[in-house]
Image (cartoon, rainbow, N blue to C red; front, side):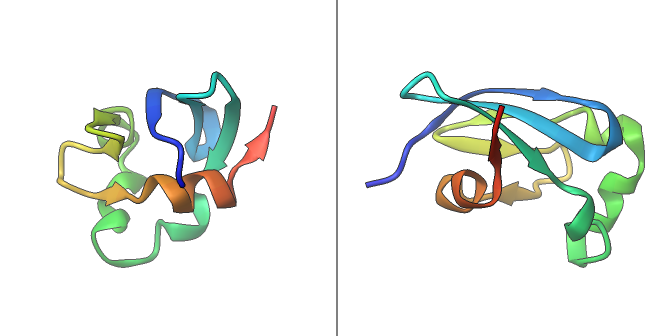
Length: 78
């Protein structure tokens, strides 16, 4: 079973503060993925800051998205 993302806040240095449905807050670093495909567009900080919750995960204005299981697994507790 995976946990849905219920809130996302863009931080400095291409990091995201994620809140999962169990109340846990975790930090996800997007910077390692900014040289891959559609994520290259997120190097533009204005675009990066368009992140929002979409269904049970997150999405940006350019349609880039990430799986909630991946976000949980690759993020760090804060």
